Image 1: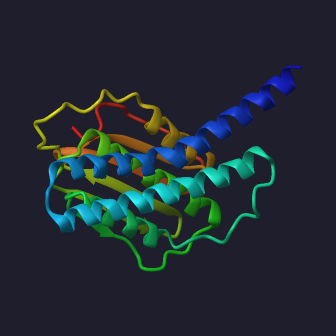
Image 2 (image 1 turned 180 degrees about the vertical axis):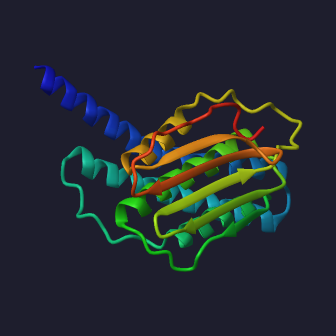
Image 3 (image 1 turned 45 degrees about the horizontal axis):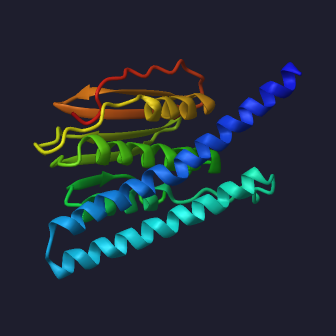
Length: 221
């Protein structure tokens, strides 16, 4: 009975993680562009926001369908590793579309396993979601991906928000905990905290197992 309970709990956690990964990022983008629609009369900007809402909603729907495959235990065969730089470029473009300058520094065709690429995709989504939530008016975002013979290193940094409107929600630390757990599963580590006058999240996925250290604070402020 204890074993069964443990297995059920693990499955609940896996489904919860997948649900979070599916909806949090895309729905945050939808929310931000919906707010932008209320604040602009520019036809061009409104068309851009409407396209972004449609794209993010479609991506969320596809993600939910993938999650249902997992729930019904018919998850598709693990695909080959995606070009994670292409995904990071898409995230940077989403930030730019919301008026947030974003600089991406990453190799054009990084080589890594499918597991590492999938983890980095989720970690990057989490970082961008946190920036949109906690630093919506930031004037500077820097996303960096570097590969060494022993590790894959990812960093997302943002300057403090200059938005003096509604204060950002108090961080729960859930997102940082998910990042730490994903890094730990791949024998890596993650850190988050103030850096260079802003907020930084750094993840290192290497061959040696290292203790995960997450220093939580107030992301993006």
